[in-house]
Length: 145
Image (cartoon, rainbow, N blue to C red):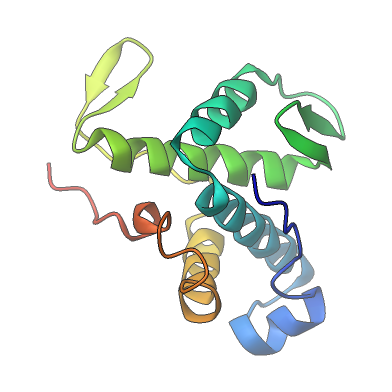
């Protein structure tokens, strides 16, 4: 697995390049940028392993560890990673997204849609060529139900 966990932008860069309004926005957008980049690096087998490991993590602390990802992450990164993994799973499955035991014809929810959209636009503008093989999932169209 490719391990280029460099941040795309510093918090200061975010104010100029991406247009965040405050530090909390910058933290959230940075988390989504990190997650988008990480999920786009994964091949299908790595994706399934990370998804399984991430689904097993329990919320309730300051740092989270996922065996298939080196280092720790905060709650912003964990939530962003879960959102991005769910989006990629949705894109892989097609129009039906399985949530718990019910099949629901809807896109997985994103906790911070504004931050995700800002991160997605920045990623597509500055990084999509590098990850063009696995970035199809960030362009999933809106609900068609």
